[in-house]
Amino acid sequence: MVKMTLAKALNHKNRLVGEKVRLFNLLRNTNSRREDAKTNYKPEELFKQYLEVVEKLIATKTAIAKANVAIYEQITRIAELKSQASDLRQIPTNEADEQQQQYNPKHEVEIIIIKHVAFLKDIDIDARVKAIEAEIEKLHDHVTAYNYSTHVEVPA
Image (cartoon, rainbow, N blue to C red; front, side):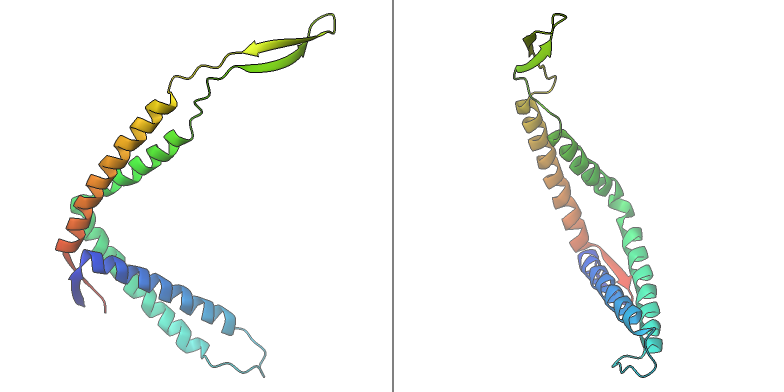
């Protein structure tokens, strides 16, 4: 086991994920082949390495999760605020009048004006999203400081 900051452990986890994918792809591509086909890899060794990386990944993710308990509320808040900002950006704010043609009972074309109203105006949404982004930034600063000051033990 190696002791490192949580920030470094998160990077380590990402490298392990990449290594797991790489080993799995090699295993998948070399596991079943023609008997006379040459390969530079031994599937049995790739499988062993793949399983070892999975175990390291489990231990690393577990260590990270345990360390994050203290800031889990902030992590969850960041995720939900990002989702809220994304949702707000999708709300239509059109208040322009719209012309539509329709036929009256005499089969004559009439132009009607449809008026749109919006509860949330674009300026309201922009202001709310800006406030959300400011809160996310403060939370990120707190989480980042925590990640660089908290240590965890992960497999080498």
